[in-house]
Image (tube, rainbow, N blue to C red; front, side, top):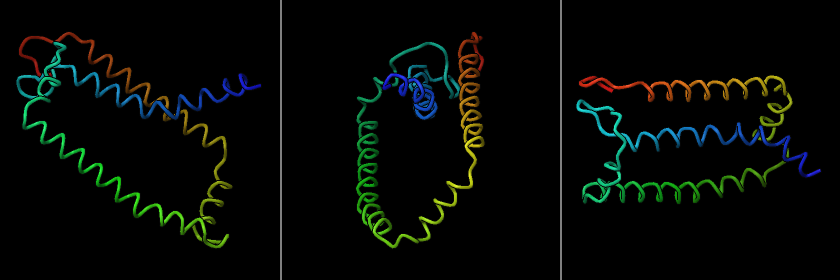
Length: 144
């Protein structure tokens, strides 16, 4: 029974995780490409971007980025958790609960399934276009 459940949940996991994994894979692939002469990216694969992280200028930028991300996370937790607790402890007829209950009742499962499939198809088309663009040979002096 658990194996059957896993098979039925697999497409849902794929559709849920693809919007997160696909952009990360694209960024990872771009990070190994070389900077072009006039900006953009060029074909020779290299570790040049990762070697630049040791430069003191970039270390400061990376450290500041992580600091800002951490501060924003803490601020969201400090503000968001009490608000969520307040909303959940309220009366059973709060506006938020009414909105989500009526939204859940009014959306057809067919429409939800179709919209999920359209999102998945658009991600696959975008990935195919990216692969096609990366597989084109670059001419000398041509912008990437």
